[in-house]
Image (cartoon, rainbow over all chains, first blue to last red):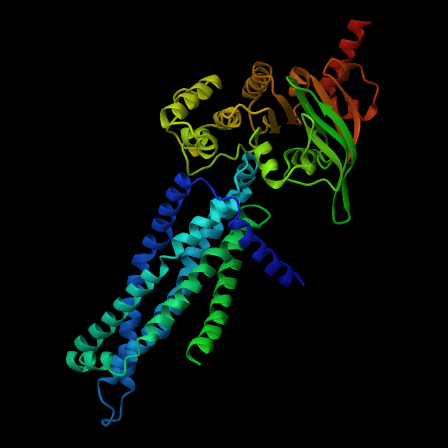
Length: 245
Length: 255
């Protein structure tokens, strides 16, 4: 019953976010700040993880090709498919749920605990629009992060494959181009936009409606991460069935 | 003027406000006192429109809050200033940013007009060198002054303060009390203060409401509180031996 009430509250919150917009001159600054914090600020960790995961996919694929009849270009093919279809959009989103999600929950939760949200409301500001809307807009730039994660992941796979002696550069690149279906990239970007909305809104919900003190801010961040991850995994399954099934 | 008529508020099984009626006059400092759990904070949040009473009405200069549309309620809120117990300053903004925030949000003033207004109110609360400091870099008393400056920067009709003296030393507490009292008279604001501080009661309580178990137990002024026979009020206000002796001396002196 509590879960149903929470789901209902979540959708009411989403409706409120789009009511009574904040003055554009202020909103513009908030959006730019959130793009910097949420998107640009996450590039380092995403590039780092993408490079090494791409490398590991490449090495593991190479080590599992024991049959000499299987062509070496499979390494590039498997790396491309893994990175584009799952690693870049889904795995990266789980990492972002931890990094960005906990930041969103703790920053909004701290504002709740210290009555800063009440202060906004008393001034007549729609606090949900002021706090959550810029995060949603900023996260619409998330597909750019995913595009970079794809590129770096594949580059990591190429580096590990070629410099690790598992594949020649020509074989790897041939594998990358083998049976390429452009819709897979579209599918990946569609997923990333949906995940971006989830990452922006679920942690905001947990921060905005939290009760208690500093300890509860920490608990809310953890809960937000768990629920964001769970929803991403479920939505990933549904979207895959709808778009590729 | 704020008129409160028979407001009730419950949270689940807990009936917190059980029918409170009172008036808060313009240009006066009105104090709400009572023990913890008496319903003071819920009452103040009802006055601020943060909680909707289950029954009863609250009107602001004749406008009944519950009968206003959502946008009219928001417009009315822009006429309210609030000083929170913990100041509730935006910690990512400087002192100047905090005070300028409502101006930037709700007015079409130019940058220089806003700057002039911010300088004026910060000077009014005796803060002249703190414009570029962050809330974490200033003392509790200074934070309260910034909160007062932010609350009055839009020339509010109504000023609400939730325990403005909590956590302050007695000298700073008196300064803050006097500042609120002066501002109330200077700008002819309806001020409502939620407090535990007995110095505030004695110094600036032009009207005092004593709440007990969600009901208005007593109301009067700081002059009348000395003379009241209401046992619940005397037990609360004169809880220390010192205050009891002071009261006795006062009564004897008057007789």
